[in-house]
Figure 1 (cartoon, rainbow, N blue to C red):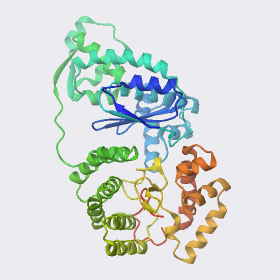
Figure 2 (cartoon, rainbow, N blue to C red):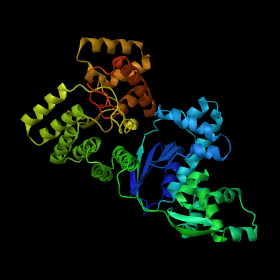
Figure 3 (cartoon, helix red, strand yellow):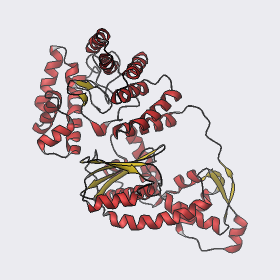
Figure 4 (cartoon, rainbow, N blue to C red):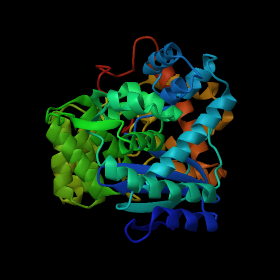
Length: 474
């Protein structure tokens, strides 16, 4: 049973206490305007937490603590660019920069800091879905929430004082060198780390990012310097120009996907409309807007959105299929049949759609509006392999790839693509955690994709730049 509410009526600590006492397992999703965070529980204990669009500062923290060098971090980041599914910490372990035991300690620290940050949210909504597990289950921790609740309460109280001196992160501070020299104070290690960064050009956010400290540590240190008169405000950073940039579009897109996966369709609608406004030619935004309209039974809007996605050149087969579904619900059966026929003739290449490749890894499988209507996309990160099996050569490749898989991987693939089960249904049938089903499905599909693509690229793909991975057909 889902637990939903407003953070104004029930604080996050109260919600966490409730889940802990009830020994609940699942995902607590929190949304506050343009922010979105998740906390995963296993029998009441926190095992993972993350915040969408919040910078991963694991590498910065390791460099600042002296555990790794800036060169080691740069090498790991460079390797990660070519391996998007590979976590930065795992790369550092593989490179021998840190030990796995250390990585687990840093991950625990990150999870704790994410929860502490979420404690500062006094408005927004929460939604707990039972039984949902993190996508990655190989680096989970187990944290007793009672400790976090005590420390979090202390931090919230302190942060309310810090905010009086640092109300926004666009303020620029500079060190008063004369006053500092006259007083010769005994500064903390955190304050000494901030001093060279307070040069009158960097705003608070830039100082915090460069410091390698957590926001609370850096905020507390800066608060002390301001209160003692050693740091003074000299201005604010320039307002972000209203120009379109990749990071801004990506932030709205990530939030939209996160809201969509949490079934928060109104919030997802807002974010994808923003993507469409910022980048009118984006094909993924109208596709998601169509999916949301389908979920909300707004058939005419769904049809218009899928037509826009088709005109923009993205996700042709899935958009045509879903267009046909919307037209069918509108009673326009001839048009629906034509769209379905066009969809059947569009063989999707097994590659990623730029910008959306990893959008829905966490909800692989097929979603249904009804037993006889399948929505393609949104929660399906991998294309159905049978969609490419239109020739004997492809069938042979699929059979060969299936034969080379382990029994576990082959079983998951057959249950999903032959029997049409969702990943939740597979989890229930096999008695596996949902995260395990997702991991084995992705691994099996990777093997299958490699067999189908071969050396000459995806079979049936006219161009590798347009794909269905993330929102594919079956």
